Amino acid sequence: MSLRKISDLKPVFSSDRVTEWQPMPLGPRYRYERDRAAVGQEITPGSEQYEWHVLANNDLAHAKRKVFALITEEYL
Image (cartoon, rainbow, N blue to C red; front, side, top):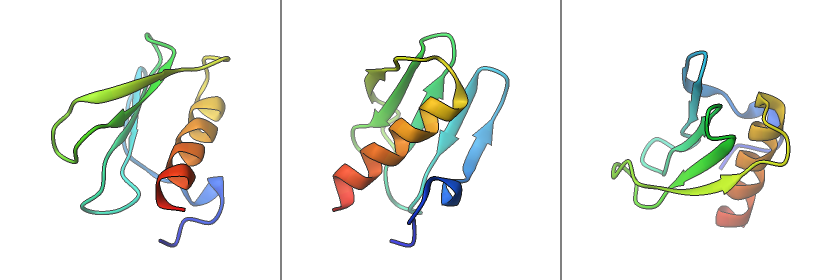
C-alpha cells in the first residue's frame, strides 16, 4: 500500500455532508458523515454496511485522521 501520510488520502466522493475514501481499488470504503459526526468503515467491500466510529470533533480534518488510523490498523 502506498499510503504513507494523511495528505496521500484522497476522496473518491465528496459533498457538503459526506466524504468517502477508498484507498485500495478492491478494498473497503471509509465514509465520513457530518450529520452523524462519525466515520464508517465498510464491513465487507461493496456491502455498503459500515461500522461507525464517533469523532471527538466533527470536522473533515479529524475524519481524515480517524480514517488514516483505521487504515493503518487494518493493513499493518
